[in-house]
Length: 104
Image 1 (cartoon, rainbow, N blue to C red):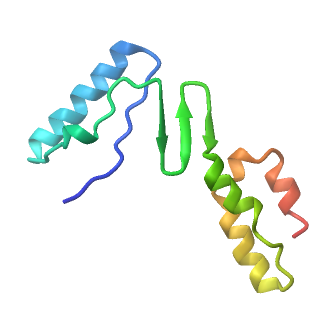
Image 2: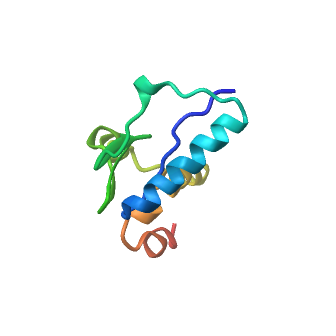
């Protein structure tokens, strides 16, 4: 079994270690192995899955954002549906996304 990207976040250090302990116990219980060279423990920010994440914010990495900026607006309805579905996962990062996409 390969598990990727386990994220533990808390702004209260005691809670952070409580969750950390819980995850380690689960790994032990199910005989799962962690690769410590791929661990980032108590980092104030991280780049993960195309996003920059810190305690204040979640934002797209610039390279990933450029891909969306360079998309050509579709001219046929089927392409528009595909276009909208690509932006759907960004809806919480785009102010008034629902209102903007409603007429489409």
